Image 1 (tube, helix red, strand yellow):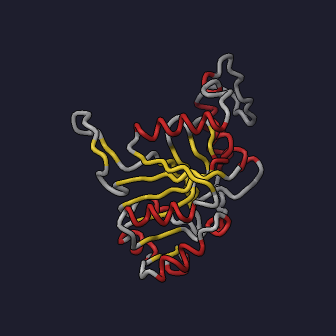
Image 2: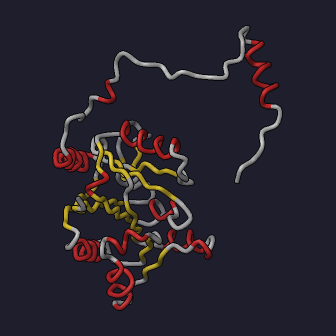
Image 3: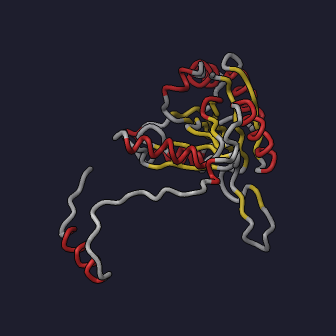
Length: 238
C-alpha cells in the first residue's frame, strides 16, 4: 500500500537552511579507493565455497547434510525421524514440488500419522499457533553466505517467518546454486531487486545456525530459544 508524504519539500528546505547550504536534490555515490569487502573469497569456485560453508557450520553448531536432488526426499525423511518427527510446519512453496518433496510431505508422512502443516495465509494467527507447537520447521534458503554459515529467508504471504524460529528444530534446504561468498553479495542481489522494481519481501531474515547467546560473561549458550537445533540440507541443483 502506498501512502502520501505531506510537506516534504518544506521540511527538507528548512533542514538545508539550518545547515547553511542549498538543499541537495541529487546524490552521487562515492567511489572508494579500497573495497576490501569485494576481495573476500572473490575467486572461490562454488565447490570451494561449499568447503568454507562446511567448516563454518562446525563453528556455529549446525549440522550440514549434503545430498543430491534425487536423494533429498530420503535424507529429509531420515532427518525428520532423527529429530523426533512431527508436528511439522512448512512454507507453502512451489520449490518443494520442484525438489520432489511433495510425495514425502503430503503423502508418506501423513500416511504415517505425522502431523504436517503447510502455511495457509487464509488461517491468520492459526499459522503462528501451529508453528509454536511444531517440533520441526522446514524452509528454503534464497541466498546462502559461505563465510558466516548464514541462510537468507524471504518471508511473504505464503512464507511465514515464524516457521524459522518458533519450532524446536529448524531444517533449511540449501540449494547449492544459492551459495555466495558473504553478506556483500547478498546485499547486491537484494539491491538489484529494488532497482529492477521487483517486489521486495515483507521481511528478509539472516539466520546463522540455532539460537544462541553469550550475554552472560561471554559464555556461549546454544539453544536458548527456538530453534534449539538447526540443520542445513545442501542439495545439488546446479
